[in-house]
Image 1 (cartoon, rainbow, N blue to C red):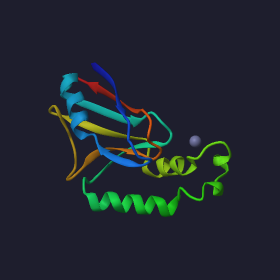
Image 2 (cartoon, protein in one colour):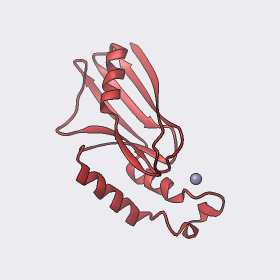
Image 3 (tube, protein in one colour):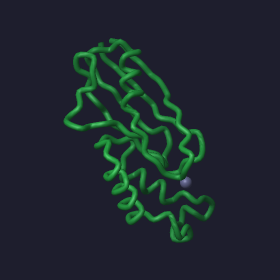
Image 4 (cartoon, rainbow, N blue to C red):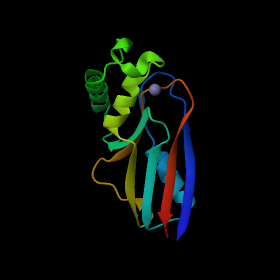
Amino acid sequence: MKIFRKELWFNVPSRRGFINITPQIEECLKESGIREGLILVNAMHITASVFINDDESGLHQDFEVWLEKLAPHAPEAQYRHNVCEDNADAHLKRQVMGREVVVAVTNGKLDFGPWEQIFYGEFDGRRKKRALVKIIGE
Ligand code: ZN
C-alpha cells in the first residue's frame, strides 16, 4: 500500500471565499502514483470547510446568502464566543459546510459523480490557513 500526505496553503484576502481545489487534488493524486484507493481532504482549521458541490457562481452566491441568514456575522455581540473573538459566525458556517470530503480513486482518477468539484470554503480569512490531503491505496 502507498501513502501520500500533503498540506495545501491558502491566504484568502477577504473574510469569506470559496476556492475550487480540484486541480490541486488531481495534481496530488498524480504525484502519489496511486491508481486505486481513497483520498481524504480536510480543512485543518475550525473556521474553514472542505466540501463537494457544483462550480457554478450563482450557487456560490446562494451559499453566501444562505450562510449569512443562518449565522450572520453582525452584530458580533449576539454570540457568546465573541467575548474574546469576532469569528463565532465562521465556526457555525464551517459546521454547516463540513470539515472534510472523501473521494474514491479509480483507475488513477477522482471517481466523481456528475458536476462534482472539491472546494475550500473560507469563513475567517485574511491569514494563512491550510487543508490536509491524505491518499491511501495502490
Ligand atoms: Zn473563534
